Image (cartoon, rainbow, N blue to C red; front, top):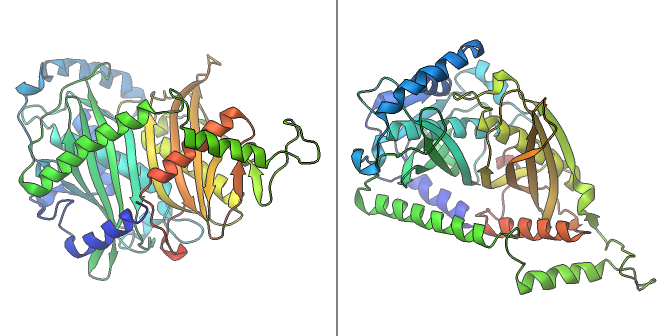
Length: 439
């Protein structure tokens, strides 16, 4: 399982060219679909009909109420679309535009992965608007938002801040009101673009005021490869449902997991006292509670999305950077991200909120560090905290890292949850540090 992403990227390197999409036979049918990275957010504002000025946001949202008449009463009333209808490419010209490079540059002269997460989030929304485009309407009546980052698997490719990057993607599966988006990222190496990562996002469509669900165009796969992509989308949906149904918040751990936790507990008992209360750490181990880091963000209008909530990509970037710092502090050396998994956007974050982020190591194995970041918000008028997101990141350190041990039952559940997420990852087993990305 952990070699899957590496095999996938090796396979696709021979299949994909700079003008090919996720399916082998795709050619970009419309050269105008190649956007500059700066054009993505501008295009989204144009589609939704919002202003770049914060003071105009109330008026813009009022105008969107007039778009309700364009919403379909059922999915059957919408024309079906093909995968190539939503296919777009986006260029991030780090090599040819040095002025752009500063925003993406780390102190180690690599590319900031947090910025890449922001770009993927914007691209996923734009792809869905391409799928649901209404030719007769200047603005879209749909409010499309990110519901879930299903997974992001990174391949063995160097991310240089001095070479151009290209994103591509399209809708790969459609439900009644939701869409799965497959995206890839490439970087220029010589005369070709080599794969860097594969990402799967799930987006949902809501009405023009973002208050209720809205139907989206059905998707018709063409050919065996697209049929397989669509089938995989159905399987992904089933996997998410199954994973949720066995959540440790709903069901007790399995017998194997209970045994593992009990053995960990026994290994921390002090043999001198023969008491359940006297706990000592085994060699090369750290208590889970000692791996925490926290941060606070004030959510300013600058970080808003096209619907005047806080941009999901911003939340992912901040969570990732705190997770990276947590892994760095825990492992004692520079960590590298190898996978992102199961980021659920449970509640929107309003402009002006206080964003509290709490990160901790919940599972380790050899050089790998599984980090969980919990996000919650509180308004300036209300001290009540509400969970908005839980983020899961898998990092690899340069050296073997200590074991992490839970002290309480709650921490034991976090440990098992982290182990489950780690075991579900398609993580390459060996990634040399010069090929990996940082915050």
